[in-house]
Length: 366
Ligand code: ADP
Image (tube, rainbow, N blue to C red):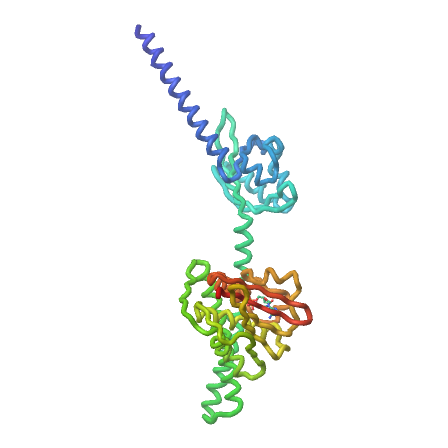
């Protein structure tokens, strides 16, 4: 009787164990199959034993069978083999329980992807298998590269006016000590100083505005004002210099309901760009017209113009054409302008003919 009871208990325990095993297996399978990250299981010989659908997509294949049986090296470009070797070595030879690194894989169509790879070892039916999770971090990788490049450009751009300012203030100080007289030299040093302070201010403004846009903090404070008044009042720094003529044409009395400060910022950016990138065009025309429920403002120069392939990208963050390298800038001005205009419900664009000049325009709802 006792033996019978013992057997009954043992059977119940086995049943429970079996149920728990099936549940645990099903849990693992659900996680493995549905993970949005690429998952694979490999043998000690590095052969791929199982992959999930995300892994199939990541490598650009249609079904698991095309991948099972191959080795991950088959998908790694030659120069990344060493990374995978490090991973394998650490795991299998040094028996580190888990290891993570960033490396490359090549999709079926030859596209390179950057991956964050994490591998762990686990026992399975007396064998040790490897479980690898692969995350496609290509976008993050290029964003990181872009950010690093941007920081180096931004530092360089900020350093240039600061160096000029340091030299100028030293010269001014020296001149003032000598006689205290206002000489032509002194006036020149002060003008250069003022110009560079303005440049610095512009760069810092661009950086701050770009961060505000990132955080969704670009706020509009709208009022009703006469657009021509803002156009006439903008860019005093350029008007005062006297080299460039800014001509206002078109509708003079049009009123808009917009953020006056930010519209001024857009105008200053477009006019500054005309001076920077079309320096030989001594007249800059700002035209205002009414078109189908919108007010269109166009800033035109007669400079070198822009190649058609660049036009659509000019408003992207950090975008600069190759020929822009001779002028200072961060590639943020048009991006910020676009954000401002779009937030007003308007549109922004450029038309240009190489050798003839460019028209940068934006619209605001009437
Ligand atoms: P930044 O001036 O800091 O480079 P912007 O976003 O204001 O940034 O301009 C982006 C790019 O557009 C410039 O680098 C330049 O290549 C091009 N661009 C802008 N305005 C003009 C223009 N009037 N003529 C020719 N190229 C221009």
